[in-house]
Length: 414
Image (cartoon, rainbow, N blue to C red; front, side, top):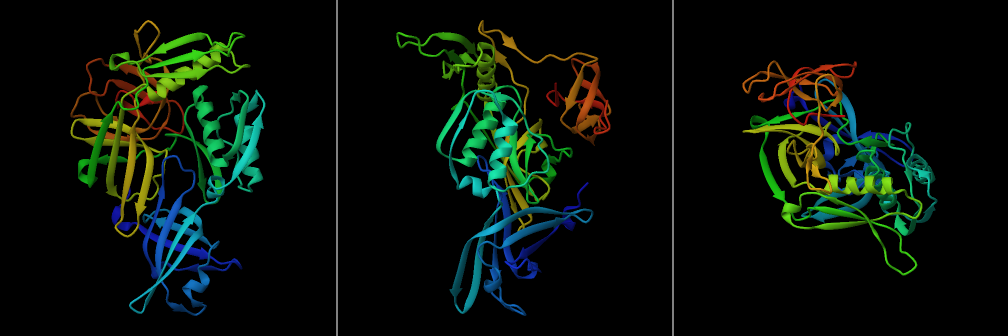
């Protein structure tokens, strides 16, 4: 357990000659954030432009200097964010000088760089991602992402970040799961969403505010697979996948590539329906800061009758007030409909080996059962209790997880 009263932050800088300085005592308004649809971590701070033995801080903190934020919870000390000073703003007011700095990590280069690229059909995800990162001199410690084969893809004057996001999205449509590109301690990595081994639990007593928004505004209820244009200029409908059409027909078109099989095209269409065919529940949660939580992590929220897992879509850490704001997306088993409108769910039975997301396991299936944190990993379903509040009994099968008890619906997958 984290003792939030022991959390501290430290800010280090490295100048152009690689000299390092701890400037924590001069810093105000320190924070960092990871936003949806952005690759780079953004950090910012305000510093009093005081004199030091090396001169004024504004002469040390220059555009391009490396900044690193370190956090401690009394047990572990880790770097949680780094970046290069990108915006340098010196302000003089009432005989007081303040320097405002905004910093981005090296993935920011990908958000600001354009490329023209052509990838032949059959090119793998790994090849595309590693080639682009190598070209922009962003190091990796191995590759941990998907590696599916893609159809022909052409990019004209596209930002490199958009190319990478598109490739990972296409891999997702082909069944690889959802992956994010993140930077940690100066190294880029492809991380599967929800793969964090520590699942933090948030309850009413440690939540400052919670706002919930449920919307069907962007709901997709039908996806049609369209073939290539024929000689007469028309395109044939090759498959139709229906979802929650009780909310009306909200259709997306998926055009099958010239070298793409119908099976792969239907799989990609199904991924569109799986991702966009459920009612979206978005939550904004404010809580005391846990510096180790990042975008893409899985957390568990217990508020009133709600006991659910959520993915972190975006997060802001405020070191001044020691609180964080998270944008969350419900992590639920998808329920969809096939072409004949019958409901289809993932089904599990006793004896199945599953991937437990991590979270809480309980001593019994009853509503008032005591629960304890459990790590993610492989587990075996040993019992099912239909009427139980926590209906599934899991026992871990690997050394990563320690789950041995009753867990909630939706806390594991194949």
